Length: 340
Image (cartoon, rainbow, N blue to C red; front, side):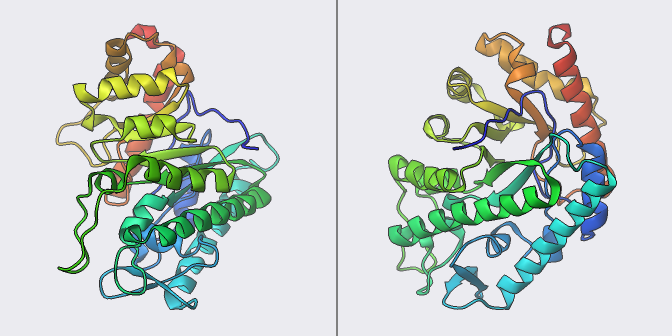
């Protein structure tokens, strides 16, 4: 049975972080986000540390290697998978060390783990003949099931090391393209048709039920499939507030009505041209709730605060500043949302 958890009123990051120093990054994240920290992702380390390559260290009985164009399913575990596992183990060691240094062991804490979701993996990974996994429904189901099992094992290891409860974040940057059928084929002869929404929902839920953990689905992109996410087994949805328009309001309102919790990307992941205040960052959340006609208490109970997207492309200086802004925004929304 999936454990119960709430992220309402909390602050966290998306996952990725600049630089390549796992220990320094883990210490920074725990220092800034002690209430809801996450395992750091450092994609600048290269092959195997990026979002898709990292999945090679999580998938069970499915091996990935790098081709000239993309990651590909291969019969045997190769150097890329070993590299991904080494990076993941470094990150786990760094988290455990920072956790102990912060004296968090033994407390009632929650930590977030991120992984590329099954739809995005289906879009990005190739099968042996060079086609996207997405066009092979059997392979796509296998990826979804393998990912769920791998995440359950991954989370169990984190709990063993830290004693914390785990929330999973499935990163689905390709979800809109998968549903729209806008992905190009790998060859001139290949087409990638749209994945029907019921099939996409089944794939996503297969991973969520397989891991058996509270799961958030995240995308920094536009055209979020609100109805699919509402019907999914995910308890939360994470998105970039700067991309939200009037067309999205009904879907977001239905998420709230369904009891979903929302992680709102309110603080720019890239440094803005002009300095921004925490109040400027917070106002889109307040305006959203007001336009939907809901009580602002939702900002205390069903809303978490994050940067708009991952921070891997930002400077360390801005990344730290962004997390502090997130903390200030989160505190203001929890303390007195009626004050805005």
